[in-house]
Image: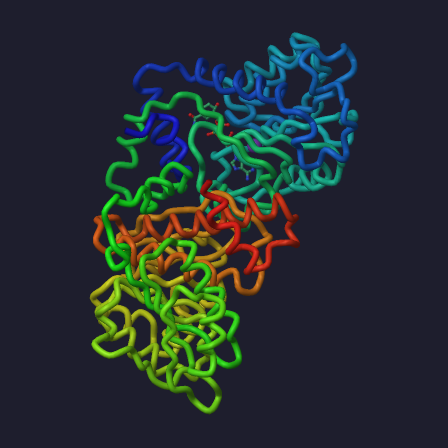
Length: 534
Ligand SMILES: NC(=O)C1=CN([C@@H]2O[C@H](COP(=O)(O)OP(=O)(O)OC[C@H]3O[C@@H](n4cnc5c(N)ncnc54)[C@H](O)[C@@H]3O)[C@@H](O)[C@H]2O)[C@@H](O)CC1
Ligand SMILES: [K+]
């Protein structure tokens, strides 16, 4: 049984779902006022706890900046509170009041003339405490920290002046900004910037993770993100999400539970999966090695690698444990024909991963594996060839599992008619999967994986260190190895794909921590895969 915290940390909601969950809580009797007190109290506490060194823009704040002390000296810590018209502004005003009583020097920026009732009451009380309130940006005194409570999930249209230009000016100050719920100006679901948006140093996401936190276009605005769990009952979450296809964050606990560990005490190599990699060409020999090393790290029982004949000895020297199948090659050095060992055909394998380094000259090979009845992963040139064949029509004819692992460019070539790959990556990957019947993994800063029923997994953390040639080849091998091992188990394919993507990201994160973001070449990455689990 997963505990509540683990379950809550997996959930990702849209603004509409969050509103419905909130409605249930209020309908059950929780007073709105009490919930705001509770949530804002938690935020105020976190603001006092966060050490300045963990803050991205900390260079703009001297390390001993007093505003972050538990008990700041009176007059030493200046916090500006940005207040919007809705309950996001109400949260910010409760934070203002709490920090005021903790000895911080507070001022309030409240540019809206019409506020929701509760927000207006909090503003009135703040004023009665003598906290200065300003309506225009020009009046604002200096501060050491800004708290952004302009808009939360209630933002529904583009920001316009004067608030848009005020946000632009606030972003220019070299002062850290902590956003409440999400940086004001971001669309809660797509993460799009609605006119302009606060560039936060830190964001306190309230209650449940909102979808924007996992959309690539939002990342540079979010800063460091943290979930403030305010005890939303799981029953309310379940009641609202019930039949809707879920969007989930893959956590360490889920990924580890999906890995084929521990192994049964009595087993043999073929029981632990037989993977066939089809990869490489004279031009791209390294891709085949990296794919093989990714597969090696998966622990797969048997690994066969089909490459052009002229690459055979190279592959043997790098992967002595693998069965290297040298194939006849074209004049250009691509695989011309799959020449599998005697008594073996494509159905002998538990999974096939096909694509890295093939070149488009291997088109007949890709056509052949698509016709096979073996679970299949297509990557790189495998995807480009599939795109030429017409991805959706081709995949619809295929019965067994297919996994596609495109980056954004490949995705657009595969699914030219799926709208919005730039506007909303999560929606795009979901449509691609439902239309094609494949499990689709869309690579990015936040990789998203969808199954044909529309369920989505998101890899919640990664590193730009992985934006490097060959790192995708490693993922393909790793994923192939896990898929082959899962062949006899009842694990949903998308769980395996998400686990592979999570593992790949974790290895990148660990390698970048030890070697900087410049030190994570694809070969080095393969050396961190096992380390990331231990
Ligand atoms: N979901 C929950 O259970 C809780 C929510 N709380 C807070 O409540 C927030 C949501 O509150 P609201 O629904 O009041 O929404 P917001 O506070 O996000 O703002 C909505 C207000 O902004 C106005 N508005 C929207 N777009 C605008 C634009 N482009 N220009 C100018 N005005 C615009 C709307 O008319 C409305 O008055 C959350 O983000 C969170 O901070 C917390 O107080 C407590 C718990
Ligand atoms: K906000």
